Amino acid sequence: MAKELVECVPNFSEGRRAEVVEALAEEIAGVPGVRVLDRQMDPDHNRAVITFAGQSEGVGEAAFRAVGRASQLIDMEHHRGEHPRIGATDVIPFVPLGETPMDRCVELARRVGRRIGEELQIPVYLYERAATRPDRRNLEDLRRGEYEGLKTAILSDPTRAPDFGPRRLHPRAGAVVVGARQPLIAFNVYLKTKDVGAAKAIARAIRTRGGSLPAVKALGFEIPHLGLVQVSMNLTDFHRTSLLTAYRAVAAQAEQQGVEISHSEIVGLVPLAAVADVTGQALRLEGFTPDQILERRLGE
Amino acid sequence: MAKELVECVPNFSEGRRAEVVEALAEEIAGVPGVRVLDRQMDPDHNRAVITFAGQSEGVGEAAFRAVGRASQLIDMEHHRGEHPRIGATDVIPFVPLGETPMDRCVELARRVGRRIGEELQIPVYLYERAATRPDRRNLEDLRRGEYEGLKTAILSDPTRAPDFGPRRLHPRAGAVVVGARQPLIAFNVYLKTKDVGAAKAIARAIRTRGGSLPAVKALGFEIPHLGLVQVSMNLTDFHRTSLLTAYRAVAAQAEQQGVEISHSEIVGLVPLAAVADVTGQALRLEGFTPDQILERRLGE
Image (cartoon, rainbow over all chains, first blue to last red):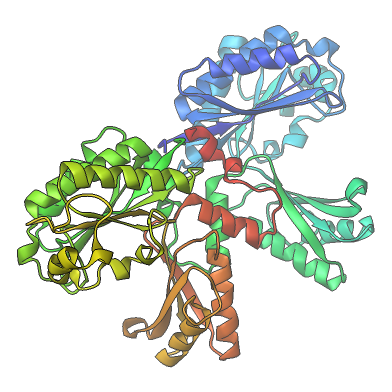
């Protein structure tokens, strides 16, 4: 397994023209040692997410090239979509994989951010772990007013001066948020009831905002075609709240409400360390590390 | 990740001369694409275990070369040790990893077995999944009488004629058992008591021989330096009894006995699929496969 493995999950403001997303993915895959793992397009949000990974240096280069290509292919003056956004490449999170330290991704975000600002003349805001100020940690705060509002705010409001690049939006590409964060895990638990109130109550009880668990976002949804309801979670730092801790918290709340769990699902990809964590916790293993996983030794 | 990944765990009748085990490991590592993952020497048993893996073809070649080298370096006429054995290379199990089907390992065992018999003139017995007769599945049965007893039995007893090679022991190397089996997982659960009777009773209740779980060997031991006792398990087919099923069976028995679990441990390596199984089972995941593990996509 690679020694400084980094994942990158850029969000682009294009979810309708497949050929544009294809061109962006090709730009990324053109960097040696970088592998595109997944791509998702959402036409309502008019937004695409490309997941790729590799050694930190190659991943940084691929992210930089993708921002350049997106600034040619996507014009924010004509972009409409439900999802809040401030740029053609809206946000670029770098995510440590394996044993890669978070600091490595913070450095990478700042280095790539500086290049985007200087070489592409697109203003860059650093967020989450790479943020330079506490009020820039949260992505939602950086997107306030969106592309349209930021156009004037960046000129007039000193708190909205970018970390790198010019203090005006790029005429087509807008601005970019660049940062570092832990891998995000999308984890849903389905309950054997049609009462969406139960799912919503459980979500409120366990999520970070107003509830009990750190690093957990949660909402309750109806899933009519299954005749079930769903507690839909995003685990934003599985080192703080593991999959099993989240599952057990939902199970405990469900029991209190007299509702049974049907099953659960992980949407998309999950880091090996998160799977190893569940194993260690479920079996009460002492001293267990992913290095004991046979296939991992083979790939080293 | 490689497409036809196979592990091989040969046992050699040498646990005291480190230079001999080193020479065998070098012979194995000399085959391109084969990686030595682990080696263990036991001076009391006078026995060594080398774990290696790679694509099936390379693994077969490496196993063959190691048998040849062992027949030069180890003389069974002078071998003494506690562990039962019939040859310089005592047993060669091929183990499917990842998506590799068991049949692939059965074919490999038979092909390598034939080469050992014909080219090295060492008699070969096929065992476990590669066995040609039901009475040859069990390794212990094939080792009856050990090297010393087999010397005459192979000549006189028609049930002990080898599957491949001459019907007499090799003058230095004896005979070899070759076969295919599932990965073996060494899993120990520690109990908060000094009463070894509790561990022994739990082991008896859950193991395949006389107990409840398939594909589980279990014994109870005292662990004086920890002030605990241990239920020591070998899971011989985690598809039949998973780590979590074994753990829960021990936990249920311990509860009945009023004994608390302290912790558990996996000794040595564990296949990714076994770790993914625990995760799926603990979280009641539907449709979860190791392909969702991010690092796995990178290695493909």
